[in-house]
Length: 415
Image (cartoon, rainbow, N blue to C red; front, side, top):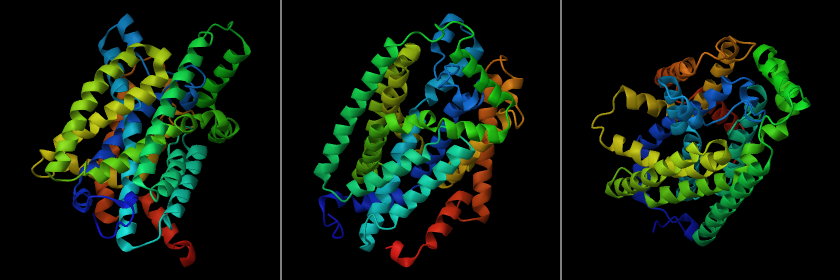
């Protein structure tokens, strides 16, 4: 055990820590997670009603039943991207936030610094960034949920490993219970569309569609503010899952899962085998079930497959003898993940909503190819811009703003 780790909560493999810090694997995984997250969110930006389409029943993350009823190349392509992306990269990104928290905890322990100490201010700043992002850009922001989760998990890391394990698995059980109850409740509700045409709900949904197709920017900001309780529901109902994945990321890091050594490769091989072996059939079953198992698909089955994605990316990275432009682009995007996440949402807002180019309304009903093209174009832009930016600057723009702001806190607040 490392001599600086005086409590069970600080038990970690020093070699795994150094290897993970030297390896590009974590940065590449973050870059993959950012591109994959866009693979889910792009369908919200391009739907009728934009980001509010999920709560107005005009949008869905699953198209498998449509594909079965009317198979074709377009439906197959849309279903494939939705299947591969929905919930998986959200889980992956959450897991990686936990890994990042474990690295910072380890660094503080090695320096003998107080914990959580200044990390609290970093999490609170992320909460403020997420709030601004929610109000000004995107209703389904993940940063606010991550910030709150990080504050709780940062405190938990000062407890014993036994306490952390107990909390982690209790939260897993709680999450499964919540998803089961919500799924049963959704199944007991009247089918969508059973209300008579022209009813109050239908009129409200039509008004939301008009808002995103024709409304002004400030009108959309006002809509997000006035519907904040509904639009912020995801991090509330998934909070136990966020906690579980953060703690799982900590546990995997301490076990050396991201190390550039034989032990790390063995762990990633098991993640690949079990994550894909269990995750693919499980996600296929929940996807084919359609909206009746939408919550199970996104918040239960998807995290299993996300573990397989870690193993798969690790398998590929381990076999790259010399870093090339593709792996370098993903690693650069991973180093600027916060800026990339916000930028991709800003670009989609400007491209799709009425106050911008209005592509969502212009291409409504034309099929999914333009949506896939938008996803590809924004992804390519991010992967091109990130390495170019890092050639001149040491960090992404939002990362630099965060660092600059926190560095100017009074010394007593940074201890």
